[in-house]
Length: 436
Image 1 (spheres, rainbow, N blue to C red):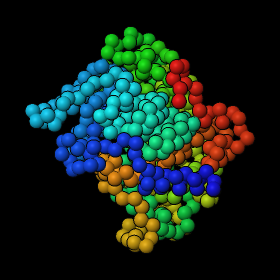
Image 2: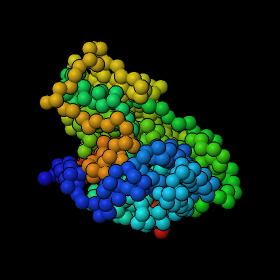
Image 3: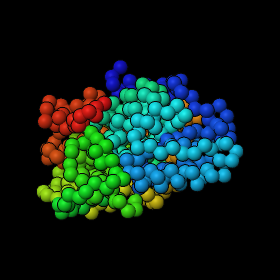
Image 4: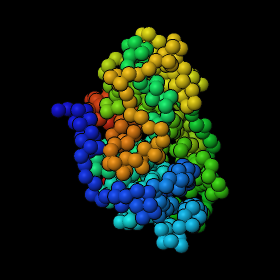
């Protein structure tokens, strides 16, 4: 059995027969306060705050702990949680929300069933691995990882410990994206030939002066496994409000829009092609990286992937091609993006997928699917190995843009073919004492 077949089999097996090391109390009862799925939140900023709001709105869950390296943000999240459950204090159904400044304290607690992680990309691997080893189920904001090597460790660890995992690829829980993928998978556009994927980019900026570290921010911990760098607000996140943080545009902490939007759209590309457990066999890319300034991720870009089935995938900025994912076959095309689906011929949109055809995983609520799977121990609509593979496609594009030449990739070994320079970019060293 090759690696690809093994991963397919092991993922399905883990979803169907794995017995969790720690069974949530919620599995043994209904949605009474004493039987809810208890959550801890690691990262409660811009995206984590949105995830927190969704779980606070779920009757079958209860948030009991929040964690952030910014004391102001963690205090605001703690107050928000306490306000949500204020009416339950008198009955003893809610005992308060604990604030933490270190994720290791949170995952060590035995009264937490699941964690939600919304940290900078360079802080994804360590909390995920720690949570899985501690017996917690996991929701992780996309992208999966900073590097392909980290993603492999994360996927292997989550599956080894039998944890339920969902990545924040919520487009899979959107009926339009599922419809587009089912049309392609069932041959409605004929033989699939090409896929075009396009999304936006981030601008660069000028150099920024060093600033004093705010007293409420544990900046040394924020840097963590990344290289040391002087503090400036545009490196981290705004100190007032929850605006878009600067770290998204710095390669030490993330890859830019190739993983920011790419994790969504290239994931749908893989779903529609049925290549969720593998990847391309060649990749080449070009872009211009900023020559100075604080923000150094890619600008306008052009990436071409080739898959073993012969399908060509073109991924560009949305100034070059229309935003979204377009699947083109011998008999037509379908184009999908958030809020819109189009096809040629139009009659494709009226096509019904029959029960004996390929019917893809159906979810109408991404967080609802997560909670349901924590109860049932089934696999989520966006599980860990698929999350890793989708992120790997993005990171392959990043590596190709950095090297500016055509690369051969072996999706089974997850190594470039006879290319030491490219293989060195599959991983990044972590700053001591951090390590996987």
